[in-house]
Length: 281
Image (cartoon, rainbow, N blue to C red; front, side, top):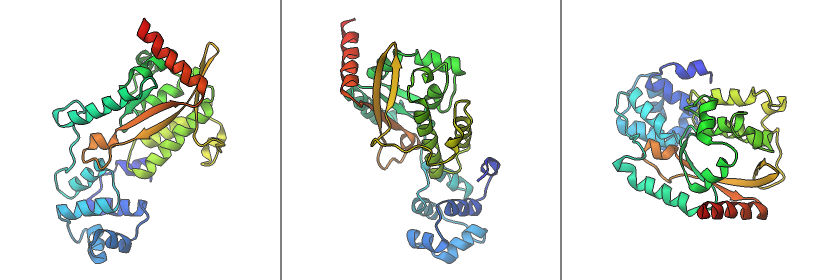
């Protein structure tokens, strides 16, 4: 799907057909999953019939469409959005913000971040600020890069003004961002900015030509470690992502918690020592 096609406004029938084709589901398969007759789905896609609100929601659920795009599908059919997008510090989401803070605090002394759907930094625990603060002032680095409003964490790792000079296995880590962006695009092919990030990574001056091949990197370890070093001190960490289950809010669905764990004993002891030094200062 081209970027130009993503920008074209689609009516409900065209949008439904687009999602069905992307999910590689036949009209018959969608009929079986949604309980809506194949004939009616055909009429919806050609514009011969108009859907009810409940029908749009049923089709969205059957096609596993992200909440933001479900709202777009509803609007294309003439209905109001069903899923709110509220600030994380709002009254309706205060309980979830508290849960996120508890998760970050519980992960001390190891780093933990909350990222939004554009990989922007939403929250960080003290462990993350301590650890990454050894290498750069994160907020100053983002300002030096150009204060990106999208994909801040990825760009922080891609730029010389950010963390790139300190990432020992930079090619492997950057390729993992590329693979992650490609997977995200499979989930939501109508995202207009993911292709921009994919092109930015694959065309990076230090990107090998082999990055254009999906199987460029074979990993002998169970998970890729992020290896960082400064002044002869090296850290090895791996990450784990967590999401809210069954979110009914666009903001909450797009949030992820990225927790960092030491990949060796030396890193574990250094992270504990960082926290101890911070407590005594």
